[in-house]
Length: 239
Length: 242
Ligand SMILES: Nc1ncnc2c1ncn2[C@@H]1O[C@H](COP(=O)(O)OP(=O)(O)O)[C@@H](O)[C@H]1O
Ligand SMILES: [Mg+2]
Image 1 (cartoon, chains in turn orange, green):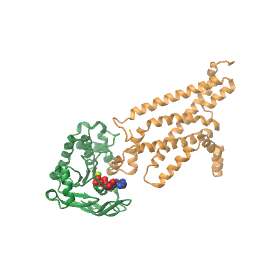
Image 2: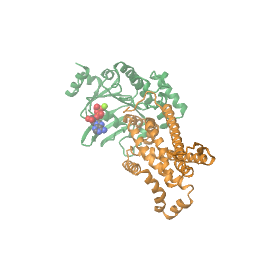
Image 3: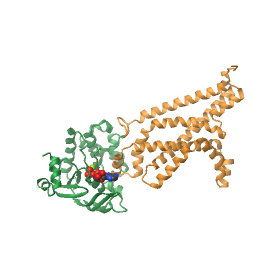
Image 4: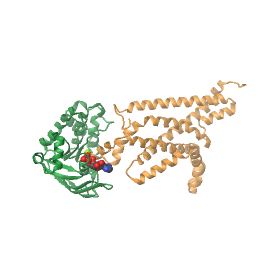
């Protein structure tokens, strides 16, 4: 093999700044998508468990669609197809005037996809709460929404911290698909460095190390969260 | 106080309650007993609208529970309910368990709710455990807290669904003592239980149910001394163990 190793290239000002900017976009896309996905995922997950049939059906449909269409396809649909399908004014706005279209589109696609997966976790979490607790809350006069807010969701979110951790890691990995619609996130920047310098091995090693660091930090944060929110001595019905 | 008029309820084709009629006056203690599956739990769950009925009418303190437009949350906040498995909120400390509905349903301020909660914890002998979580307590302690949680709402009546049947024998007394005290203070109570000692001591009336129907509804002593139906006699001889 005749490969010229040159790790120093990563620390040249231009390429280092590309890596940093890529890292910044990766974290921004992933965290923005995650926050939106948590909210939508919680709503849809709750929707799958409420007494109202219409809400249940709408929520189930959401999950089936967004979870089963590949994320890459969803990115393309949001980026290329949706502006054409919208009323003219809106489509034109999306294509021309929307600030940072690659970023916004990537966040929307990633958020809606991740939400469908979080929704399933939330539903499963709610189902581990013994039905007697809901009866007790109802019997004390709490409304359905108060019962979810103060009893069902706080318990089920604690139960699903471990599966949510792996979703949280996945959102960083999935954010790399944003490069396909032109967002210069971490993977795209490494690719670009590889093309400019012919030091592909170094460039992608840097990306790998950064992804691993992100994963380690994310896992650590989630473990802290789990420790902090643990209910003393409590295991759910399936625990 | 509580009036149940000719109610019937079905789960699909299965008739859980058939034409049940009874009433509980203010300050009265009524024990409901009967074999497992006879509809006791279902009957008391209908009283606070946890279960809907298909026929008949229930009123509590003049408000119709079975009315289409009944304000059930307001009504429920005035009726306490204690369950077989305690159903304390596991993610909240004992104190928070007692404060939640006071604050969110009755709209009491934090201070007022805490004061009320502490008073009731003292009353059930649990004042030293306010900061603990339910899973750190014994069954008997949890059930006393569940009773305190209901009392914190200043209910006009209390419903109990087999409050001691999930407890180890040595803990039954501590819970029954709290209930006896409550009864003697004049609380209106409807209690599903097989604790016949409790019934004899504080119940004004005993209702005996079988297959979804109220078979007997009589003053306590009459019920124990000469049950009218063979089924009640049978049941009593089994449960009293001779
Ligand atoms: N949600 C339900 N769906 C169908 N059947 C039920 C339901 N809840 C209770 N039942 C049935 O109704 C009957 C009465 O139940 P329950 O009131 O719990 O009896 P008890 O408290 O006297 O043991 C039982 O046969 C039970 O199987
Ligand atoms: Mg029962």
